Structure formats: C-alpha cells, structure tokens
Image 1 (cartoon, rainbow, N blue to C red):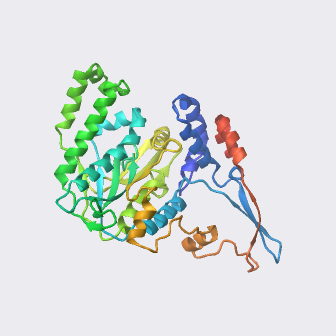
Image 2 (tube, rainbow, N blue to C red):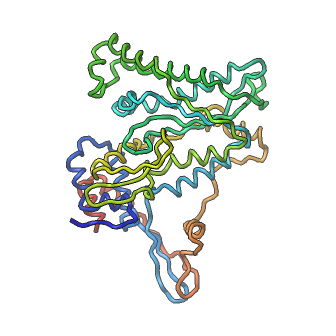
Image 3 (cartoon, rainbow, N blue to C red):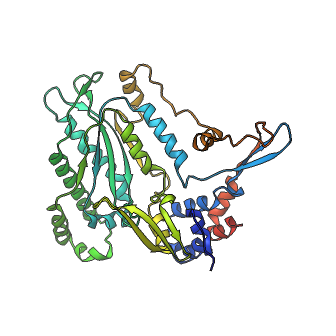
Length: 398
C-alpha cells in the first residue's frame, strides 16, 4: 500500500488508493447530485480537465500553463465575499447572534434537508419581530445578514445552526427615510421565540406527513401524541442562543462569517497525517476551548466532509430587511449618498499570488512579463464526467 507524505490535500486523500472510486461504488445510491458534482470538481482541480490559461514570453518565447482551480479551498471566493460585504454593509453597530438547537434535532434536519431552507427566515423573523415591537419611537427595520452552518468543529457532528448579524438600529417604521439607533436584543425573549418557532415548524411538518424520522427516534413518530411528547421533552430544556456584545462596525462579523461560507468544513492545514487507512486532524473543542486530536477511518472522513455539501443553488447566505437585494440600494444610499451598487473589484490571479507570496507568477526567467496567449475552458469535459462519474477518479488521476 502506498503512503502519502504531508502536507495533506483533501483531493490527494480522495484519489489515493482509489478511495473516492471505491466509496462511490459502495454508496452511489445514497449520494445527492450536488455531492458527485462537487467531488468531481475537486478531483479535477488544477488539471487539464478544468482548462487553463496559456502565457508566452514576448522575448524568449517561453510558455507557461496556469491550470484552472475549483473552489475546494474556498479562499478566493471567501476573499471576494468579504470584500463585497465590507463595501456594502454600512458603518454602524452590529450584534452577532448564533442560533442553536438540541443535538437530538440535528439528525432530523439531516434526514429532512428541505428544513434547512426554512431556518434562516425563522431566525431573521425573531429579530425582526423584536425590533418592530420596540419601545415608543424605537420601532425600526434592521439590516440582517446570516449564514447557515452545518458542521461541528470535529467535522463528524452535524451541528445545524445559524450565524446571524443584525444592525443595532435601523430605519424607523414611522419615518422610513430616517435611521434610528436601537438597543441590544434581550436574550431571554429571543431564546424563547426561537425555541417556540422551531418546535412549531417540526410539529406542522409532522402533521402534514412530511417529516421522516431517524432510527433512534422512530418510536416517537407513531402518532401526534408520541411526537408531541418527544418535542415537549426538548422544549423544556434550555436552548442556547449566543448573543455577542455589539461591534461598532461590520469588519469583525464579516470576517468571522467569511470563514464559514466558501471553505470546506475542515481546513487542510488541520490534517496532521494520513496513513492510507485513517486520517488524523486537529480541532478546537467548543466546550473546553482546548485543542483536540481525532483519528477516523478514511471512508468515515469522506462521509463527514461530503454530507455538508449544500444542494445546487441552495443559498447558504441570506439577506433580510434593508439588506434584501430588492431594496438594498435604496436604503444604503440614504445612509451614504455616494454608495454605488455592484460587485467588488476583481483581483487578478497574478495580484492574488503576489499578495500571498510576494512574487509575480507571470514573470519569465528572462525578466520579461508573460503575455496571455489563449484560454481553454473545459466545461464540456466536466459535463461529460458528471454523466459518467464512475470513471471520474480514474480519469482525473491521469
């Protein structure tokens, strides 16, 4: 058996010993289309299958191919989102709130993935109701953005929770052109509202026959009485809703959310070893705030990663109230007349490389700057692989 030496890449672990190919043969009937599509992109990363930019030197005719990459590392996509968010979010105070639920509910949301799409509106709705029912002359419409997070710090846990940030203040309900300062949200009130809304959500879907159990709770799904008994046992518990102290600008919150959005649930820098059979990695335990080490079998490692891949077109980031896309420009111009909508300025590959390593990747050995000669996009090849993904790991390994 071959062994890999560090640093360890997720792509290399998938390809090593045909791990992904064997895994796919065994579990293909359980895999969502989004999983196979994203794994194929990872396996194809920086290979001719994704295409490349071809550069030539105008002096010595040297050539250089820069292969296209996927978004498996997520750094470029994360940096773009952070840059755009900091450009968009007004410079006012923000409060960050993390909504969680009992861990017995996590497998239920994994089995019934459609429920994930309903969580953001519930979380944002609790904040909106509180802001609209404030004290006299303090009724306001806040700006809210949030991210859905599905992974626990040890990767294997399916910890579904919401990271939400709201402006501490907003546009007056009485005078929609006036921005007023608000107050921090009461912890007891929002925790009670969140708990009630999630319980109601699960009960309604059970009544409509749309809720499927996982094995450990199957006996509670016999009828509405037994199901309500199960819900009530968790309703009586104390649910954790974490409210951070308000920050004077969005920088810290945006940077915090950014690391959850486009990157895999486990950073490759945390992978300590891979011996061909198991993977060892580190994580910070949320309860003890201490660094822990964990070793799991390679197929379990693959399972732990791919289950967090969202379905295609599923939006992991949502915007509400005066941050909503259809009204954002109108309200942000009231706060800043010079605000201009649009994406953040594009940063070229060469500039990104220089920012990270202090070197221009397009500089030829003779000292001249390489010029772009042609670009090859390989989308048809990727489409072909998706139709015949049984062969994907073998093809991308060559």
